[in-house]
Length: 168
Image (cartoon, rainbow, N blue to C red):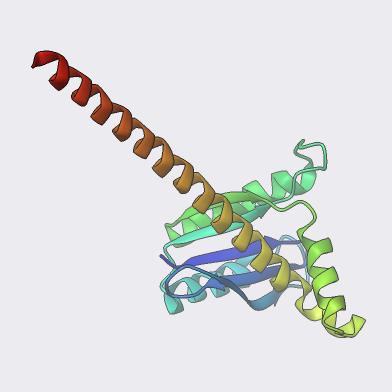
């Protein structure tokens, strides 16, 4: 399943995409706009990317405060989510994005990227981190679900063995 990751900001949207098998996330591009509420071109570009990359779901960064509360930026992200769902007809999943931009900046600094260049790619790198976090959390969740069902199956098999041995 191919996913699109988005880091929604006041004047930019960082975009990342998974590989065709859905194992890794790669930064793709940064969509810029002149004004925060001028979203027509931004939505059109995202819709174009959805078709081009055959995206099945969108993961949108959810900018909650450090204490977990939702502020103004979170409300704007939820409004953007609704627009994306209407426009693309895809499920849009909110993913906690706390500290992803800080982490993206640290990664780019470690790579020796100059400050001016970092400004142009930081949002798409943050989108990649948001997408990667989502994929890792989803894998952990499915592994937990698999291990719980394995445990349940083992318990059921033991119960059958006990029932069969007492029937003899």
